[in-house]
Image 1 (tube, one colour):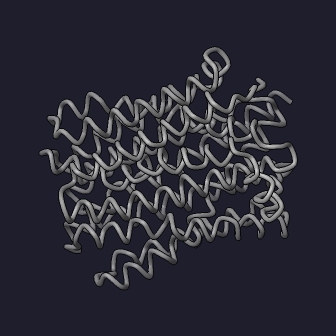
Image 2: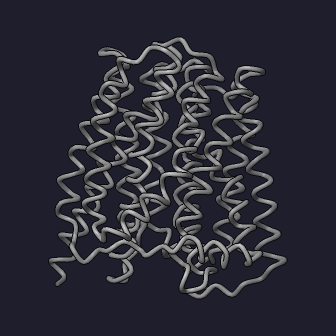
Image 3: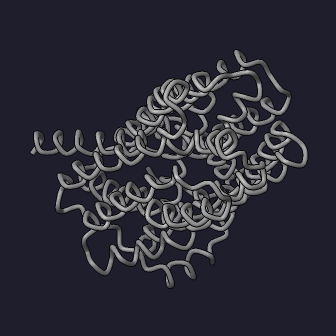
Length: 388
């Protein structure tokens, strides 16, 4: 049994590594590609980059229903991985703004299923085995970090068009590991209609969704714009790779120890600290620090994301009634990865055009501060005993 668990854990870890390796080759450098190769404006880039979060809001519940209906989450995951990889390849041939919007919608429709479906399978597995989700998810952070570093260097010599082919290849590799996932890993059952009604009657849940919108939206948007920011302050494409290697790489150790830290310090303090550090980071980027200073502060991402993701996931599950926990997780994902990311990315692109990239980070800092204040109100004025 122990051997079986270790084999399954390695399989999940490799899946997360290659999935986020694919994401790391593609999303951080897509904005740079659109600016340098296609010569789009900041508003156009913001619109294209915000397509994925918008589609996610609509598509994620649909894929959840498909998983529930078919009871074959692995088959759904394999299908969406394959389609995402196939659609990404002709992306490089698109030159007009409209064609880029259309193919972005097509890609996002399938790609939006990958994280929630795989997370559902993983969460079911680790809960059954009483293990920490963070220990598997941290491999995704490592994959993302390594990918951007490698791609930043390769793109300087081989061209930015390479990002589409590497993204597709990584997703095709993921299919191998999905095929070997445990068969007993069924999807978390999600009853969206009754779950939403129940959850939105809970003030704590509603406030935390607003916090997620304000805090996680800018975190996701930064993944899209950080490459442009590094170049704006004097960095090269290879420099973009180094920045992401440091930033995303720092998430892994924090995710590794997140479970024990949450138990020791308390989930509420972890959430407040992670949000506060995010806000400080965005405000610091607004004052146009040196490239070296930005490299030095990328470890803040480890603290903010590496702790916020597992802590928020656990918090959502614990404040939700037992019969709607899965729905609560689905809504949390849609609010942060979907709606919050879309709002921050789209409005960020407009601010970038109208003012500057630095002004966009002032907007990110302001949004995160609002989220932090909502979090404090939620945790302090609406006390809730969190059970460990």
